Amino acid sequence: MSSISQTPTPETRPLAAAGSVVAGMALIGLIDSLIVLIADMGGLWQFHLIRTAMALPLLLVLARVMGQRLRPLRPVAVAIRSGLL
Figure 1 (cartoon, rainbow, N blue to C red):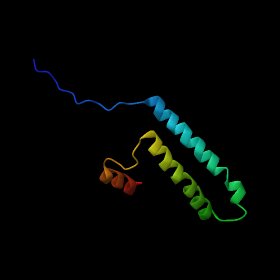
Figure 2 (figure 1 turned 180 degrees about the vertical axis):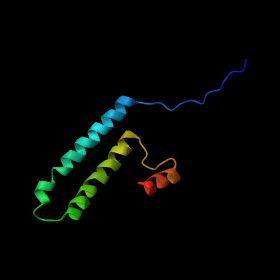
Figure 3 (figure 1 turned 45 degrees about the vertical axis):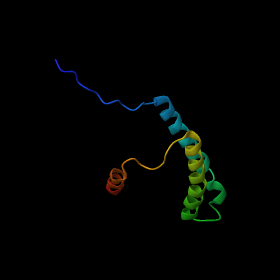
Figure 4 (figure 1 turned 180 degrees about the horizontal axis):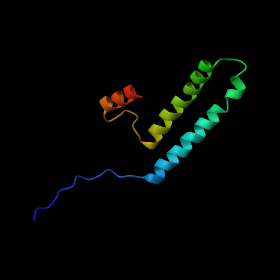
């Protein structure tokens, strides 16, 4: 009888993943609530620019603090997926 060698599977942390999703949605909700403050002064593109300018630095800081990388492991697969969307 031959033994089947299994490659080790990466560790999954469903609670951490769920917490990240909840925290991300809360952050997006907080940032989106600012639309009331800037709706009279600017257009939709300005809102998206301000939201991105607020979210990106926060994302970069959190990724560094948590020791996560933001670069994809398979950039070609990401490009294909993005092209299909």
